Length: 380
Image (cartoon, rainbow, N blue to C red; front, top):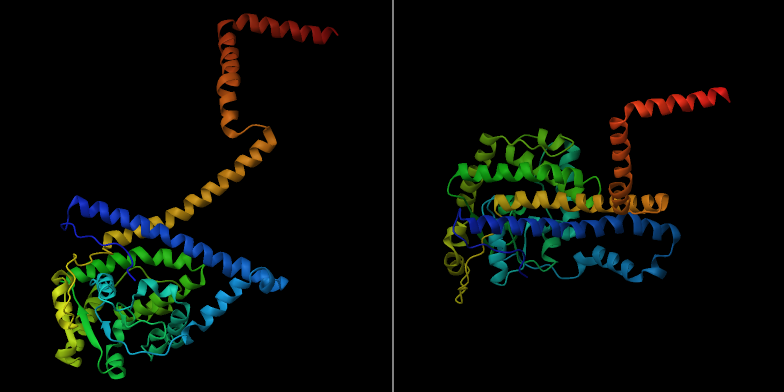
């Protein structure tokens, strides 16, 4: 399964800019229907059906879908993880995800956690919420079986990248890919851009969608781990400001420990700029793809996603408000707002202009007419 779109334009070119804006807009807008459907089902349809006890009669398929979601973690036998990307976020983890899927490895990336409710719930129950209750960010012990029961054979990005030691112990034959940037400065710049972009939408989106609320807690936990400061966790919302020195130290220490712990024959130290060949050699894939290596999810694209994801619901709300206003206005006046404006332009406005013009041209006549009219009223 291949998600997203890739860019293989020259870095810094106008084609890359247009591509990033286009893909960011489409991707951001595509999140809205999913969240709207989730909110409608979670807060309106299911409560109504539960109260009226009509769920099994009117919407049996919906009940079956909800039951299927709750039982989904039991639908497959646990498998072994074969490949795990253990690079920090913003090191090309999503490009690696697309590459692994093209090579035949079903891969879970953090961006799609909200699509797997039981996986997200596992992280919340075992890791994020216990840390929140203690006021201290702890790694804990995740249940990897919940992930592999979905058929995933590979994972990338946070939070799984932090558990390389537990994964290596649990799956001794697993191979690891450590994605890195050219230097720590470039990594932090991209990481800082991401955190500034997603914190506010995640926080406010959590007011309406439970899945986003879980993600907001996850970000608080993750920022506390990366910045080595539990105040990120105990804050009531994800903090936007990252501590550069602490974050860079986490990034560099993580990479160093990975290289020390994972045997060299099971570890690929990799940059997405290297393309297909190192991955194919590492995974012993003879038929290496000849297509360009995936390049996606740039910092600029993520920024556009955030803007697009906010504008789409805003435009929809404004459209609904305008439609309601139009209906009420037409009921009250018998005219649409447009026809009313045309009437004001063609009839009312000329009358007003003529009246003002005549009063300005014959002020004495107007005064005498007013006095005469007042005298008649007085004599009567």
